[in-house]
View 1 (cartoon, rainbow, N blue to C red):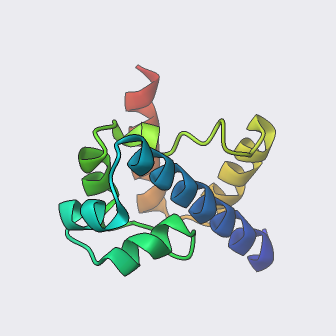
View 2: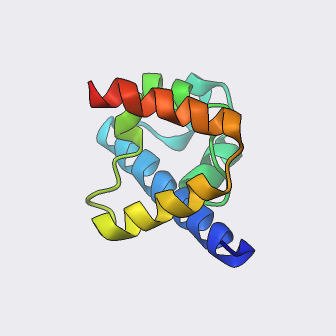
View 3: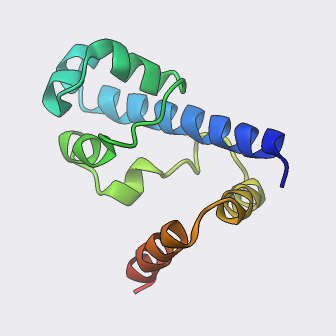
Length: 115
């Protein structure tokens, strides 16, 4: 996998996640300022997340709790834009670049979801 594909996959994921978070925030009737305060970040940081500029790696669990949705549902992009094949291809590309510890973590997560 080349660096450009990895960069494009991550950008797409950040953008989709940002759109999803914005969608869930608006559904709850929250402003960016309100949600940011609930999860302990600056409103500008939340704006960057919603715009797909940054990935909420350190606050994704807090977002899930504040938005009152299970963590896997934060990553539910089905209605936002990628086909199922595009998602599968993106996952394959991302998996190829992860270290063994990350693969183990993802394996355990998938096992829990599969049950």
